Amino acid sequence: MEADHKMPTGWVRAKRMECAGLPALLPQARPKSGSKLPHSKRFAPQPARSILMVCGATRRRMRSDPQPEAGGALTPSPASGLKLNLGCGRKYLDGYVNCDVSAAVKADKRFDLNQPPYPFASGSAAEILLDNVLEHLDDIPRVMAELHRLLRPGGLLRIHVPYGKTDWALQDPTHKHFFTEKSMDYFCGVDACDFYTPARFKLRAARLYGLQLSWLHRLRNLLPFKKCLRYFFFNIYDGVYFELEKSES
Image (cartoon, rainbow, N blue to C red; front, side, top):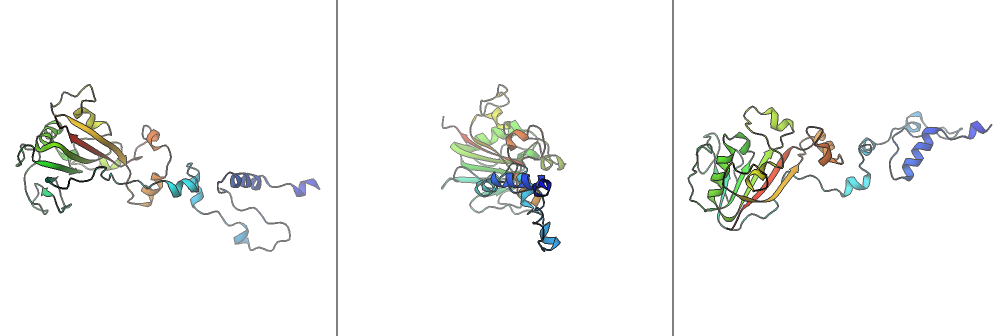
């Protein structure tokens, strides 16, 4: 007779998870004997979000965590001064001098970024933006030295590149270089191999970010411990945003 009143193991496990603030990952338990609930309601599965909880994200965390940004700028754009959008492609920006070598896109100036010097005076730029451009160029140290020449003291250099451990970086046959969040250390006097060019910047930010282009991106962005997982798995992040400043001295 006692066996008839014992709670099913699945029910006990589900109640323990509920008390801990987690949703049950099992179908709802059977109703008491004599209940006439329809079969579809008696064994209705839990919402799909329960699967996300297996990754360690509770409902509270999912609501409060900020959504990953696509490498948004940390420092406001200068209010005055020359602002360059180098390799603009189809991203024509108001307030910038948009530059590209291709005649197929709208640009204010056309020249090849692989052929410094660029047609601007030394120390004339308050801000330089390269949005997914640097990975296409031939000689990174030479380009960085030229960008340093163009910037005025205190000027900002903003760089977006694909993260080296992602399909986005590897799939494009025109990508010539790969980057991690440590790549700009070589131009900021941080790494021992900082002798590639005498140009020196102050590193203000090196931030990994994930895009949200599909449901797979959004699901991936909910994973906890991404900074650890990136050492073992690809596609944990999509891009790197660098923000550098030319020293006043």
